Image 1 (cartoon, rainbow, N blue to C red):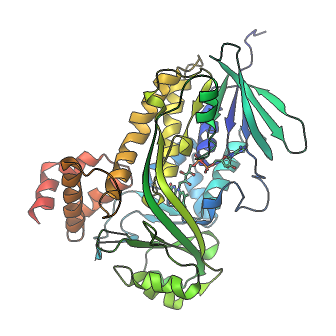
Image 2 (cartoon, helix red, strand yellow; image 1 turned 120 degrees about the horizontal axis):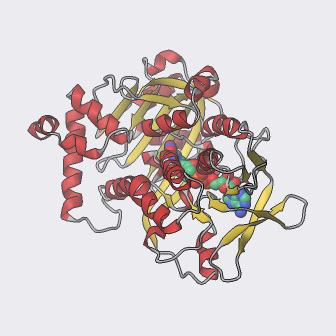
Length: 438
Ligand SMILES: Cc1cc2nc3c(=O)[nH]c(=O)nc-3n(C[C@H](O)[C@H](O)[C@H](O)COP(=O)(O)OP(=O)(O)OC[C@H]3O[C@@H](n4cnc5c(N)ncnc54)[C@H](O)[C@@H]3O)c2cc1C
């Protein structure tokens, strides 16, 4: 008989980051408990704890790849259940600076579905794991910490209608989103204030669901008119599950799409290209537009802190949350889970400082720099425009122009924005010659 003590982990928050984390922890711990205050398995897929769930959620190609790696066969399953699928370039019409990018085979899968659809499919697979326990309708209360404040040994929670209860754990992973209380918990334990970085973008979304005849999409699964410095308004119109289409319009620095149906359409008419406005001429609305405001990019630099209690990690939006129009959040959560997998492999205690350093370099930094630097391309966004940033803006603008006339550049560019390839591929000599030679 084995004398090994059973190990357990608790994940705080059942959003995408929490689900990916639970998936990788289930390979290492005897029991993983997933805690969320919402009724996750209830009929209301647009749940209270996920207000962004109403709005368009693009899954970047790298995110799709990791999702498939964690849950083999899930792509086919989602397609069978109604997600649209296509090539990330050939079947998606990208319009940047008013110009259509060349559509060409990128070799990348693009799945388009609503956020609740993605989440419920991933959650079903996570909850099917034999050692995962769901504690829904359960509010997170506080950490259980050793007397010296150096080790977290679990978490106190309030299951609905019950007393405060301790969930003991060898590892607690906080995936409770932007409103995570980890900074306050840390400070209360005497670890000081975590360094926080914020960049104001004043982003506003408005989303409406439609029924749109297939022909209007002209063979595409998504039409994306991207905001650019000359017209800082954007919109995405894409096929999703349930035979529906989702249309999310957005604008920055207070220039937000209205939610009255006439004003909403007028906003879409004012974009740099008429494509989505024309598609909507044959569309039948399902609901009225719904708004969402996203004030700032926000990052907590745990990797710069000199100390952190053991037995406790933070991931997902609780660490970094990005301008949603770049569609990075779910994919960064997927990348976070790869870092987590590496650090729990072997079963020993996790070194939190080493974890946060890898999380920064392997999952967050690239996307964060891309988001913050891209935002600075818009006049009015505050922040220092260093010579490197200006040079990057000029190079990206030339790349986008070249992608509108050259299939190879378009393919490479799509693979970079889908996070499937590193940005540096655009500087390979034959591509750079095409980009700069234009
Ligand atoms: C408007 C908008 C559009 C977006 N579009 C995209 C997109 O196109 N593509 C993309 O990849 N990403 C997008 N994102 C980002 C994406 O939603 C997140 O990055 C991603 O879901 C990871 O979030 P998370 O799991 O860390 O946190 P969340 O999704 O916020 O999940 C946190 C969970 O914790 C639970 N919770 C919180 N507090 C408590 C508590 N006290 N007790 C119990 N439970 C609690 C909540 O109920 C929730 O389920 C968008 C975000 C917004 C705001």
